[in-house]
Image (cartoon, rainbow, N blue to C red; front, side, top):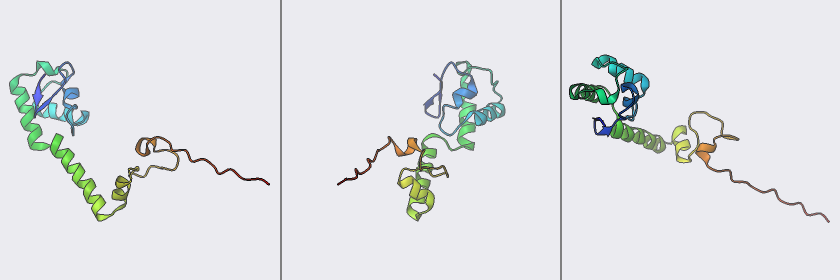
Length: 125
């Protein structure tokens, strides 16, 4: 498996799809990287030479924030939101959707399994 910046990328996939395995690089950005480095997008990852791998690694390192640094940056942003007490920080702290979705009936992914609250039984005389 080829290694780029300490991450093993999938062997048998085409280069853009393999590069998209890196956190912070999507398919669109991967195609741009291939174009700028002069790599054929129809090539498979195992067909890349050491020179091409080095070219891709240096290009990514100089132009993008990826993997651990990006994860750290995102977590720092969330901590900052919580600290200043903004709406997004409030939503992150309570594990609710923070991008404007409704949460009265949906948002099961963020809220977890449904907690049913039983109705009180009315006593009749």
